[in-house]
Amino acid sequence: MVSKVLIANRGEIALRVLRACKELGISTVAVHSTADNAAMHVRLADESVCVGPPSARDSYLNIPQIVAACEITGADAVHPGYGFLSENARFADILEAHQLTFIGPTASHIRTMGDKIEAKRTAERLGIPVVPGSPGAVTEDGEAMKIAKDIGFPVLVKASAGGGGRGMKIARTEKELPHALATARSEAGAAFGDDAVYIEKYLEKPRHIEVQVFGDGAGNAIHLGERDCSLQRRNQKVWEEANSPALKPQQREKIGTICAEAMKGLQYRGAGTIEFLYENGEFFFIEMNTRLQVEHPVTEAVTGLDLVHEQIRVASGDGLSLKQEDVTFSGHAIECRINAEDPRTFVPSPGEITHYHAPGGLGVRIDSAVYRGYRIPPFYDSLVGKLIVHGRTREECMMRLKRALDEFVLDGIKTTLPLFRDLVTNHSVRRGEYDIHWLEHFLDGEVG
Ligand code: ADP
Image (tube, helix red, strand yellow):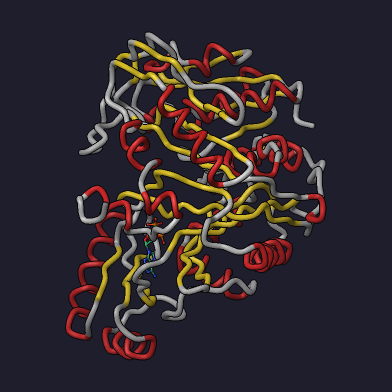
């Protein structure tokens, strides 16, 4: 087993990883910027190293400083959390060259899945259902038109190097296609330095359903069911559930098995998420994330597993602690991402937390790194905490969530808590009837 883990992250996820290390008797090293001197992850770690000034580029993304921090402290492994360096294949390569264990997949798997065309091709080869579309990049407008007519309008033009929803254009008719191609190419070229685009069928009202997978790197792999993350704003997940209110157990079993078999074929190592759009009973692969995700606690709630423990075991070469037949699902879980943002305009609201009282009681988990008097710095993302609630049924979970939201006090800054108080009593949300566009319509006042 690894003996000292450097956590190359901050905020709630740094604490999350730190807790798992403590439980396993592993020493921890925090890294931090000068803006995070008073942060919880620095206080709770066994050791800490300042790696640079506030800007993430010069601190949390500063590879030479992070490698130097490992050498100074004698850390033998790095957990990247999510975001920052978690899907940076070069970082994984550099760690390996320094005989440091990267708690994550191989650099080559990160690279494959980081390129959308390559990822889609790989998924298809492994038997994962994909959105109908061009077999690779399209360079000729004539060829693009032929493919679009074959799959039928509307179509989506997507950048191969895309991310964060950028470089994507809808063409609803033949007439719109040339313009969509041109703008997607130029946006992608400007944003990513790569103007390769491809075409796929545009799905009108899908849900976002993703499958959690885990591999040991030696050909064994399991799935841990799905999460429904359809409640999104500008492609950012806001509320996540396990299991999906839209799936029946047989569908879960079927898509889960397809994903686990694919990961066996890939000899995938560590935690991964295979994301799908789901429409009319069919799954369509959109991308794979080769890391632990923000919303992993809902999977932990329904499976009773600690995903970070599993990551550390696998990275240490000890394999997974369980087989597929040992995985059981119990009850329902919901996560709310509480951001330091105005709940209507979503403008970030950094500043000092003047009062803080987190809810507790049966089935309530808070993953957060804030405390009363903590000053949220303006340099990083606005997530202040995650409220995760578990119940025996979805109804019980919703009742408990409402109670927990009522109990939550977080003053001094604006947060998205009022949005969740609205959502938990909303009829469509209570019935689980929403697609990926529903929340935007709700925020625009178009649906009640
Ligand atoms: P990114 O890496 O930029 O986030 P994704 O491929 O994950 O790109 O897609 C982001 C979002 O765009 C999806 O969550 C979905 O809302 C929408 N999207 C992607 N592909 C399609 C499609 N074929 N049809 C409809 N919506 C899509």
